[in-house]
Length: 116
Length: 113
Figure 1 (cartoon, one colour):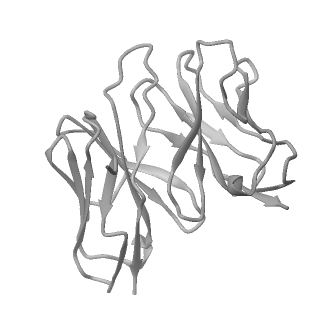
Figure 2 (cartoon, rainbow over the protein chains, first blue to last red):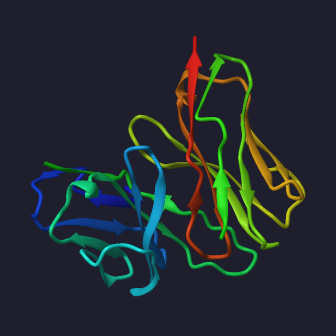
């Protein structure tokens, strides 16, 4: 009955490879996010989708491409992986915001990506 | 741009004692939301407590409570009767409307028996 699930939990790969991380939520939420947590534990937004449409795209290299086939899924594809991409990537979801509501974001367990 | 500052990289507390984690933020908005998330070694991000800026009453969740000072832009987390399971990284976060979460740099809390 996991609410936000990410796969894989760990990903070890070599520089230059292309990899994907999948995220699925069964909460019926409209909005999904990708965050990156670096080696110093700093968490920063990368992307946000609302009902399959991109609404936030922070300054992330073009090698990162999110894909949302439906509102329950938001996958992250990374091309030409670099050493600096090593981090923990978190997927999150929340109900669509309406004035006065304070719906929190629910996080997946994270994917630790290690680039050799 | 909004920023969130956690000035205590590490804190420690004795089991059963009380500890307060500090958080300040900078915003020109009047309506926003504040959160504390806990990240144990398992690396899950667990919502601890949330506060709406338009509410004057401080939020409480069992042993966790906040001291929200809107004028001072301060949002501290108080953990009462600390337990070993409270040991984790704690992140303060800000959100305007349905926008993204902006996180502080985190405070690592150690709990000693």
